[in-house]
Image (cartoon, rainbow over all chains, first blue to last red; front, side):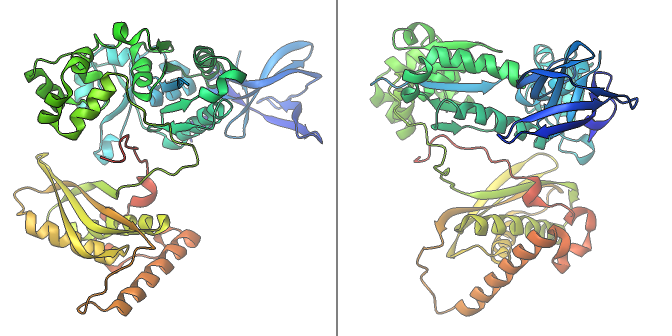
Length: 85
Length: 416
């Protein structure tokens, strides 16, 4: 599908996540396209939201990575993506 | 108690979903349209930039290109749009269980009973409007009223991304000045007929003596009169209530023009297989077969014929369709597209009157064979079993009419 090709706005990433016993899905780390793995130290917020920048919609996790806030999206096609800066 | 009905309409639905996923197109004129290579190239939806340049839904791609030379065409991705339809529906379900979809981008919601919990209609409408924008990245226009017709007019009133109320103390001011053709079921032809009677606006229609309308339009005249006066009481169907299906049909614009009876027969069998399989899936039988034909000069006609028994057999439908075709077409022109439809449906509980001249046992056997084919196709794929006839022209027959063409528009008036 065209959506999976490299986009200048949208980066699909590998994510390590846990399911909690009450059924929540929480991302723990992500691997950027250059292979670097980034730990997610905290998830501040999780809600359904769209990304106009990258183009897509799903669960939006507001995460702290390297002390900075960023959005990680779990798209409705079951893939994770990040907005390219 | 006064009903509270919302009508939510996704603005330029397909185009909006594409623009969400392809940010680079947001500032450019763009249309979602069929694949020009496969020749069914029409504009399904255009974005607002293209619409302002004069591009309209239903135009051929070349017409759209004439109206707007810079336009970008995007092939449709139905699966993606249907995902958004589903997500919108899930959101609506948080407010009410009375949701009636009208196509894949519009829905009526009866929120009468939800108001004590979720706030009044206007509040719910604003919330839906905001949530769709923030959560799904597309926009909806929502109409708020006390009946379905006015709610729909409300969602059409202001686009995109707006909420419009059409309440009891407002509709005379807001709705009555609108052109009569804005009303559901007033198309171009009815509009022209109304014009002859000097009726140009919805208000004009509302204030016309209903008997005059009945004289000129029959039953539908009265219906339109009640619509215009806000007297429509049609309920919003509950989600779980299945749509009343009146007919099941498929049509196909073929990859190449059909040139002779042999070609037509192949396509008719192909379409009939899909129609029959869908009839069986829904537990229906058809008592009338309808054939529609469009030649490459775009002349088209539709003919139907009642058959003496009810059927859900592809062979029987195809044979009847072919007979209708032979009786009505003389090959003035090659054919561009053709359709088969089973109408006058009965359920499987229908008691069949057997006749002396058909072999009921053989028919039953054939039906069982076709059901076995359904099952094989379900398990091993559509092309695992095919009729010998289809091998004559692979390009023509290599179309899975059932899976590729099952977006059903839903009618509004079930009892007309």
